[in-house]
Image (tube, rainbow over all chains, first blue to last red):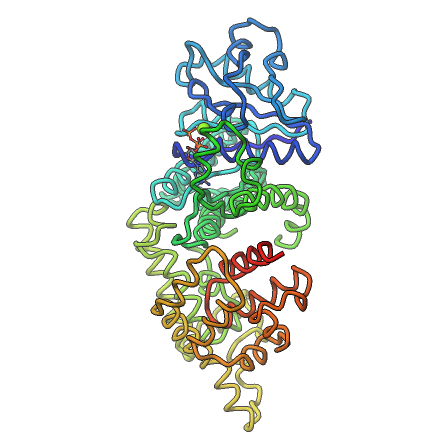
Amino acid sequence: MPNIWSIGGGKGGSGKSFITGNLGILLAKGGYKTLLVDLDLGAANLHTIIGLPLPEKSISDFLNKKVGTLQETVEPTPVPNLYLISGAMNNLDIANLAHEQKLKIIRNIPKLPYDYILLDLGAGTSFNTIDFFMISALGIFVTTPEPTSIENIYRLIRSVYFRKIRQVLSSHNFRTLAEEAQERDARATVSNPDILLYIMKELDPEKGEILENELRTFNFKLALNQLRKQDNPNIGALICKIIQRHLALKMHFLGNISFDERVHNAVCKKMPFLDLYPYTQTTLDLRTCHKNLLTIDEAEPILQNAVD
Amino acid sequence: MKPFREQNYYELLEILPDASPLEIRRAYKRVFELYQDESIVSYSFFSKEEREEILSLLEKAYLALIDLESRVQYDRRLIELGLMDRDGQYSNKMKEPIPIYDFKKVHFDVFEPDRRLDDLKERVSQNAIIQGILAQDILTGADLHKIRTELDIPLEEIADSTKVQIGMLRAIEEDNLENFPPAVYLKGFLKSYARYLQIDESVVVNGFIKRIGEGK
Ligand SMILES: Nc1ncnc2c1ncn2[C@@H]1O[C@H](COP(=O)(O)OP(=O)(O)OP(=O)(O)O)[C@@H](O)[C@H]1O
Ligand SMILES: [Mg+2]
């Protein structure tokens, strides 16, 4: 099974594609066979970040049955070990993706033969985006230090969280328990997941635990992108703290990624930033995030024991 | 995890049951800043009502714990409920005799640094020369020396407090590259130095490491 990372963030332009592309390059350079999937269907541009012209093949070939398997839509890139599935769609966009098509994508991505698969998601919190995000339990949220961007991150996290709770509530016949909980405390709704969870656990410890464990499978990370010198460097860590404290979710801070005007140059030159500007703070930051992603993951079981 | 509203006062303020009044004050300041309505991190997370509820809970916790008498009462309740260990109480720790000759030192250690740090931070932020230096991309030892003399802090004091050898600090300020330790240690020394002067650690470390890169 490949390791799959979803990269999301409510707001457009926060740097999801930039980070996905550069993390992919770092993974590939580290010797991992890595696939980037551009799931920003209709507005795909991930290829540009890694220095590829508009790919000929795209995920729509698979959806339109032009090719038989998803693997056939994979394009090689100039970076050894790095591959891409483009999300460019001729006449489709994510908003009018049929349910069957969505399921086809969700089912087939985990079957692809790669060490790492990175999913670059579009902005917004549409159902389709959330469902793509949930292909993996490891979600990387990207925000900038701007209030609007942070606000959208919260919206996205809540949407993912609620969707999960709803899934569990319906699949395990939990409905009645949830109703009982709400009778006991009117605030115990999906909008107050911490209270809901707590009361459900009191009413029925076994089921409460199932729900809690389901939520615990989420392994969220946060990257704070485009941090400028005058910004407060602690914002990212504090966001994680709020999420951990009030949504009872695992949320690790990966690090700050400095703003650098030259990112624009790299995009315009259609060259990977990492290669064009290897000795910049921003590249250093990207490397730190990459390292944290690999090491935090490995350290997880130990950490969890220590906390529990 | 317990929902926020069910947490006890110590949990709310994220402190241990034996926290000192100074720690309580600091903790309250920290959480207050996080949850107040201007906070960029929390304003869009909570509704107005939620925020008010949280802030009033935190205030209640703070007021109950900062007053020694009400704290003892609160602790007693936690102990009765089996939520707190008798030995973990601050009031117990207080009962341990404080050697008389140590009193001044204890007092100094606990209260002075706080004021010293706030005061220093203020001076750093008000000083145009220091701010100018910190805005540079690259920092040299001479720059650090300039900052320190602006703040009028003797090198001996830093060495004494940070336990970094004075020779090492001098080498840094004099850009004496040959005498630098391996980068990991150097970074640690720079951080201690920056922390003592209340200037941004990462700015100092990054700026200085860059400078070494250029110097080679
Ligand atoms: N660290 C950075 N410093 C400077 N500019 C950046 C940085 N990260 C991203 N950018 C710029 O921000 C713009 C948006 O980046 P990107 O396309 O990665 O965002 P996105 O989140 O994928 O957007 P969308 O939601 O539209 O797909 C790009 O033009 C890029 O040049
Ligand atoms: Mg994008």
